[in-house]
Amino acid sequence: MFTAPIAAAASLFIVAHRGASGDAPENTLPAFELAWERGADAIEGDFFLTRDGHIVCIHDKDTEDVAGTKLIVADSTLAELRALDVGAWKGAAFKGTRIPTLEQVMATVPPGKTFYIEVKCGPEMVAPLAAALDASPLAPEQIVVISFNEAFVTAWEKRRPAGRTMLLIGFDKKSETLDPDRAEVLRRLAATGADGLSTNVHPGADAAFVDAVRRQGYEYHNWTINEPAEARARIDAGAQSITTDFPGKIRAALEGGAPSPPAPSPQ
Image 1 (cartoon, rainbow, N blue to C red):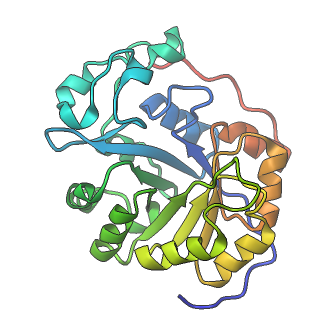
Image 2 (cartoon, helix red, strand yellow; image 1 turned 60 degrees about the vertical axis):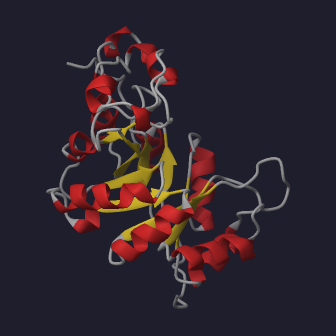
């Protein structure tokens, strides 16, 4: 990695966490469409492989939390998963909402906007994801692949070295100091070949930490932030994007605009 000067201030770049998931069922088409309406610069979604080789958008390895019925995603077919209602838990207006495929989510991304694909499984996702992106109408610069799984990130970087790939690391909130510490974070970034780092908020991940990461040539991003004051503090510390459940609220607060309108009912 190269050493580079750090810009004095980061601009406002808002990533909608699982779509506008504060107001619509997470990881669904209504949530992603609402995120674009609310002015998000990017959407982030979570993805697993089905038993029959499809890539579907869901956060957990099973469907119990969002559907009330427990199917293991990796052991289920796309048809079995698509039969479930994953919207009713958020309200009657979303009843009948289905688990979307990667292709359906990509179809919502407007020109000039960005799609953060969080891979929730391991290296087995490399080949099917590469095939899906090869067939996608999205430009390569619109795609950012992110994951906690270091084996996947390493394999993906070898397969797609020209793409943007972020390593996700969650700091232990019970520890007053960074766990993992700065040296370990930089070691993992170097070992995986990732282009950048995205972390949760922690007091130890201060401006000095961000500066150290970025001076090594890595990007730095933060999740999940739903309060404007915290979002501003992280931007001031050098974060290059803010991931939030409420993209409209955060943008309006930080840019001084009007609050977002209520979430529309799905068609």
